[in-house]
Length: 493
Ligand code: AHR
Image (cartoon, rainbow, N blue to C red; front, side):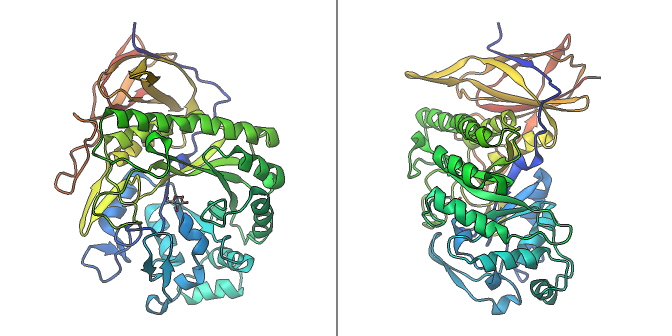
C-alpha cells in the first residue's frame, strides 16, 4: 500500500486560489530596499531608474502579484512627505527599529510605485497609525490616487507623475499591538475606524482596506476587531513567523542545523494551519459570508541572523528546509482559500526568508525562490480539495505528517504540489479521483543534504529540475523523494 494516498475531490464550491497568496513584503530594513532593490541611478550595478536589473529580472520571472511596503514596524514611523520630490533635498530620518541607520528617503512613494509597475505587481501600502496623523494618511491616499485638481494630486504632478496610480490595497497600521503603538484591541479598533474613514476613494480607484491583525494566536484581537470594526474593513491581517521551537526570540542558524532543528521548524510551519483555522472560526462568527479576507501579510522563517551580518538587518541564509516551509505554507493557504485572500512572505530580498540575496553586484536565487516557482501554476486557479492520508514522520516521541499536498485546476489542466517533510526517507504516493490523461510536466526541488543552499560562488546548487512521473490507467503513482517539493501538471483531455 502507498505511504501517502491522495484523493482529489473537485467541487463546484471550491474557492479560487487568489494569486495574491503568493504576495511579497519589502520593508526599509537592512539591505532589503537599499542595495537589494535600489542602487540609485549612478550605480555601476546595471539598473532601471535606480532599481537593479538582475533582481528585477529574477523577481519578474517568478511573478510578484502584490507587494507590501514600507513596513512592518518601519511603516509606523514613516512620514511619506519626506520621500517625495528631488532626492537630494529629501530629509533623512533615523530608522529606530532596524539597525539605527540613517534613512535618506531616496526610495519613496514614486520609486515604490515605479517598482510595482516594473514588476507587474499590485501595490499594498501600509499607512502610519502609530506616529502619524489622520491627515497625513488621508493625504497620502489623495497624492497617490486622486485624478482631480486637488492640492496633493497637483503636488504629485509637480513631482513628475501626471496620472494617478492604482492603489488596490491599503493597510491601516502595522502590529499596532506591538511596534505600531502597543495598543489594546479596543483602542486600535476605534482608531482603525477613525483613520479608515479618511482613506478616501478617488476617481475609479477601488481600495481594499486592511486592518492590523493579531499576533500569532491572539484570537481576542481578532474577536474585538471583527466585533467593533468588522463592517469597515475588507481584510484583517495576521502575522505568524516560523521559529525554532516556536520560541521568541529567534534562534538557530539557517544553514547550520541538524535533524532536531529540521523537525522543529517543520512542526512550527505546520502550526499555521491551526492558527488560520481558529482565526477563521472567530471571523466566521461575525462574518459568515466571508466578506472580510484573512490577510497573512507576514509569514516565513525567522532564524538567527548570519554571523558577521549587521545587527538589526535580519539577514539570513536560506536552505532547502526553508523551501519546504514555503511549500507547507502554500498548501495550508490553498486549504483555507475561502478566507485567506493574500499572504506576503517576509521578506522579498535580503531580509528574513528572502527569495533573492545580493552581495554587492552579485545575486542569487534561494531555495525559497524555487518553491515559489514550483507553485506559481496555482496562482488564480480553482482549488481542488483533497483527502490525504499520510504516513507519519517521527523523531523521538514526536510525529508530524510525512507529506503535505494541495491541488488546483484551470480548465482541464490539473496541478498537484507535494512536499516530503521527512529528510531521511521518501514516500510512495498514489493519487486518484480524476481521470488524468497525460502528464504535461513534473518538476522537483531537492538536494543531498537538509542544509543545502545557494552561495554566491555556487548560485544554482539548489534549484528546480525536471522529474519523471508516469500515469498508470489514469492514476498517478510515484516515489516522492525525501526532503523534496514536487509539482506535477497533468491534463484531463
Ligand atoms: O518582518 C520584520 C518585522 O517583523 C516587521 O517589521 C514587523 O511587522 C514584524 O514584527
